[in-house]
Image 1 (cartoon, rainbow, N blue to C red):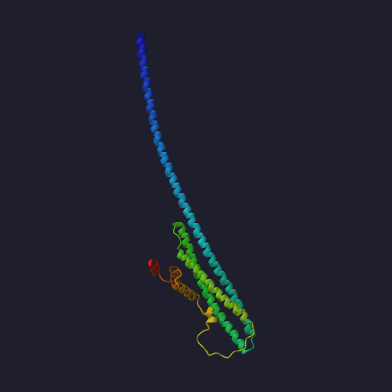
Image 2 (image 1 turned 90 degrees about the horizontal axis):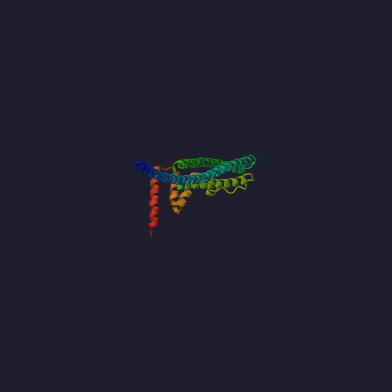
Length: 279
């Protein structure tokens, strides 16, 4: 009986141990499954994070490059505007010096010819001052275009849009032609200042009166800067140089409406496309 009881107790102990072992194995398997699911979820989350970081880095790099490009364009346009303003200041100083020289010549003139020369010089100075004032107004218009370019660049920095290359090219051409006009007036004034204090030459026979001005001597004083600029632009446009850019410049100078400008630019684009496909 004792042996039977011992064997029965041993059998029960083994069964309990086997049941406990099975429960432990099931718990381990469940834990491994849970760890596998968590590991896969973690890997997916890390992959999404890496993709988001890569996209953010690329977007930031593109935004930085765009901002730097716009800043460089603005700096170049601002430098052109400052150079034009400096030229206007120098021109004003030369005008004042030429006016003073002409006044000295007028006070020292004792002959009728000298008085005529002095009066002619004064008239030329007045005309030059008028032209210089027109040039100043024109320069203010150029400064306004540069300010618009700056505003467009700031907006583009937030929205990702870029400034039109044609608009920027038009502003640069506008500033370059203005500087040429101012240099021409400066040259004429230097010639007038050199000629002013000298003794008057012998009076030649009076020419036949003509209502047509001498284009060689009065061109820089009588031509309005906008007209001269438009003349140069039309000349280049008729030669076929940068027709689309020049067309936009002409529309800007003549102050066409946005609808008219769009129609003209569409026409220029179609004409350029037809020219490219024509054998």
